[in-house]
Image (spheres, helix red, strand yellow):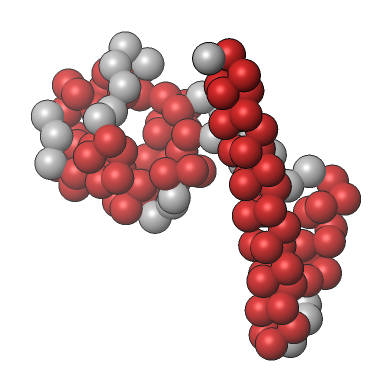
Length: 119
């Protein structure tokens, strides 16, 4: 679903008119109408106010359902991890963070070597 469609749907779910929504986030109603019609995109500041008013995250507004989250098998694994006791979840987070750091440093090192070879 596009941002304009999400804005329209969420506003209606809250039972707000376009004027009430614009008032709630401190915009002129014409700006809100342009956001809902796709004629304009909200600024970062406006997007934050919109998300707060609609009680959703900015990620929810901007990304499709599975665009930011893990795919299939990883989603199931994360779901299983969420059932672990907090101390075991902390261990899993530490392992993941160390693997991510290791991967990022290896990638950074490869990029640095490639730049060096070009010189």
